[in-house]
Image (cartoon, rainbow, N blue to C red; front, side, top):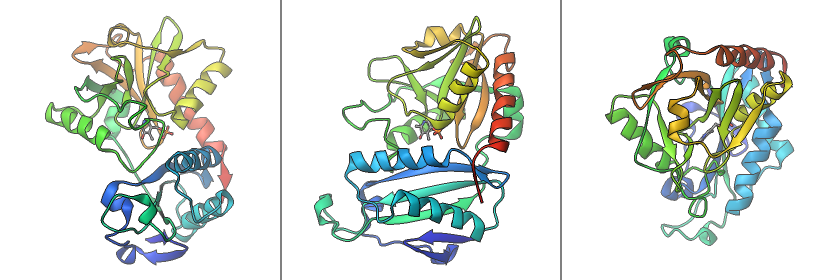
Length: 287
Ligand SMILES: *Cc1c(COP(=O)(O)O)cnc(C)c1O
């Protein structure tokens, strides 16, 4: 495997960065997870825009322009001859001293691009649906570390994942600081109730897959709602599913021991999954 590292393609074993890089020392950086299907990079511009928005807020100056970044991503896919893959883009503030002060990072940001494969959950769970639980760790308060940032600081989500794992579950619902449902550890959450598609509007990352699903729903004349959603509403939903670039679209059939709908992936979920598969196969930046 060839990894893009600061302007060069290097072998996986040589893809190393400094132990003084603040991405490592402090989680001081931004990332994106992007998928390509059938030699098309799906929603590449949207991912790049979000990456640069995260960096803008973090005041990280990327050594690549958006155009150069897109070129580097496409080149990484080509170098590795990947037709259907998962691309991880990481930009750190770069090398500094042992203090956390970003002003001490005087060089340029570090840019890493890895093109590989990823499957988040076993295949049968995409057919049968997930059982998930709500965990005690709440999603970061927006004025502490805004969940809209896809930053390298993921301990909030990792703590929630650990709590789910200890309880014997694959995924967790995280509430926001006010107690309404925010999202899962790396996925957005949707419910369907009486033909209406609902998803939280606060305390969560504005997922690109989330936007795609909302778009697909509107195009099929389905009514959508973005707002505050409680656990009670989830327990009593007809259907529930999660979305994310890595997870794609996965049904949820049980939440906190409450069966959702008839306990099987619902018809809207299946319809969305089909529409999602179609759009990913034909849309994107060709390479
Ligand atoms: C990446 C991510 C998502 C999903 O976003 P996509 O743009 O659809 O990949 C949702 N929640 C969190 C916390 C994430 O990190």
